[in-house]
Image (cartoon, rainbow, N blue to C red; front, side, top):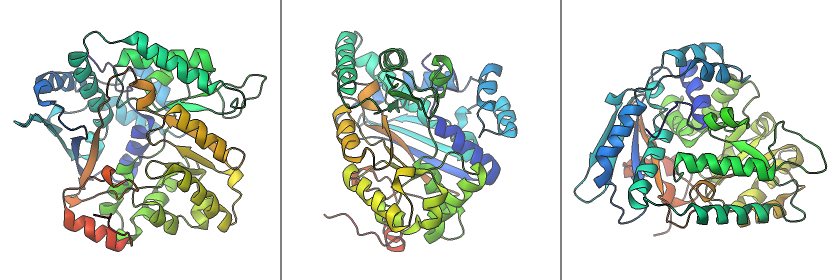
Length: 403
């Protein structure tokens, strides 16, 4: 069994799920799986994946897991009570192998009862694929690569550079994921409070994975994902105000906690138009997840200054396909100009010398209406309704990508 606990997922799934419970309990959604690697035959593993998902649907939260969630100041007791009754239901997910070798995974049902499928299902697909294609993994090579990353991070002048693990969904295997986290913790030192002082500053800020945060004494990290702002396209008062509606609903729920806004659901320009002085002051910062990160960072800093906010009081989080060398470059460009955080995913948890799977599960409908994101990286867009995409571009004044 690959997934042993419903906590083996990213924190932002729980933070979004709490908003769904309190604000949108009747919303119905549809998600779709996509593998961006050409020529990968996942269909042959459909039965194994289906068996793992069936076991995932047998899990319930344990009392100590609920107590761990309840101890987080932003998790409310009624949400924990709901999780105490919660199970994923197999009737909401279909796994269909196609003659082309592609694998079709569709998730459809109440948002409240389907939101926790995404991360463990992606982790299952990854682990099933790699245990079949790499039955004798080269962990020695993985350890050598991890050692190189740690050595790079410990170079002179980088003592206050902190990284976090965002790699649950695309990890090579759960056992390897845990080994990576233990190694990073012991070699880099663990951040246990937001501000720590000392002769040797810890450089490992935490993990998005709630189970490993609990078991290894790490800080769990995460706020919102694209699906939340996408769903607001169908749940808000009108489409043009959906991003503003999403941010305001989030602020009403968390009252200043979890104040990192995701900036790329409609592209950076549309984000900055909506992220006015009110939101600049209300939110603690923003997260980058597509497009050129250096340009994004410069635009964010200029935007704060234009809105009379000191950028040094705000946090920029970089999380798009980071490697350690790229992280160091970004740190060197923006250090001292703002607060910085870096979430590294696949390059931490699936770097053993094999090509990682570029797989995603994205929301495509909410309340029977198409939803989409218009990322600053066009390849990341996912929507099966071209008319809706064109309408979305028109509403948010976004130029279509060059042919």
